[in-house]
Length: 331
Image (cartoon, rainbow, N blue to C red; front, side, top):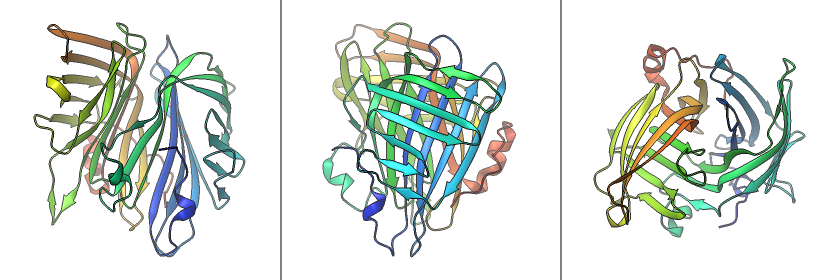
C-alpha cells in the first residue's frame, strides 16, 4: 500500500484526523526531533492542517515545543501533505514552525510496515484508527535550526516516518519505536497498542507491529494473539508481546526525568486526549525465539520513542509525573 494522503477524499459530512510524522535521533547524544504534519476535520467542516514540532534533549530537561494551525492545507502532486509552505513527502521533509526551520532528506532502510495484519482492515470502518510506517527505519540528513540559535546537523541520524488516520483515536494507546540498539545496529522495533471503549467498557490491550532482529522481520501481536502483558505509565512501561512460532518480546522502557512532551489531541467528535511523548527513551528488549537459543538482549540508551495517550479526563495521571501539557489547542 503506497503512502498517500486520505483527507482529500474524506466526505464533507464525515469527521476524521490524519497524521504524517517523523522522528530523527542523534547517534551519540540524547537529542532527537519529532515533527507531525496533521489534519483535523470535524463533521461538516473543512479540514485544517497543523504542524507540530518537538526537539528533545534529555540533558536540558523539558523539550522545546511549538505548534501552528493553518487553513492552507493540500496534498501536493510531489508529496503527501503541505501546510502553508511546509511539506512532507517520500524522501524529504521541509518546514517552519515557531521559528524552527528544517530541510531534511530521508533515506528508507526498510520497506513499509503495515501494522494491521489484513488489507481489508484498512478499508473497513473498524478499526477506527489505521496506521502504517512508510519507513519503519530510516536515515536522515540535513539541518534543523532552532529559534535560540542552535543548529542541528542530522548527518546519519536514525529514525522513522509514520502515517496514521481515522475517525477517532483509541481510548488509550501506546506507541513504541526503537532504533540504535548496541547489539544490532540494523535492528528496530515499531509497535502500537490500543484499548477502545465498546458498550461503555474498555477492551483489553491489542498490539500490532513488527520487530527486525538478526536480519529478519517478525510480526508482533494481532487481534487473536495471547499472552500480551502491559504495565504503562508516563515514566515508561513494561510490555510482554507475543509473535509467531513462539516469539516473545519483553520490553522495558524508561523515560529520562522531565524529558516528555505533553500535547493535547482533539477527536473529530469534540473529545480530547492528552499525550505524553518522549523520543529519547531508554529501551531494553529481551527477545526469545524463534530460532534463538535462550534470550537475546537489545539495548539502546536513548533510541526509543514512547508515547502514551489517554482520555483528557485522566489529567491527574499526567500531572502526577510532572508532564506539562503544552498551551496549544487542537481541533
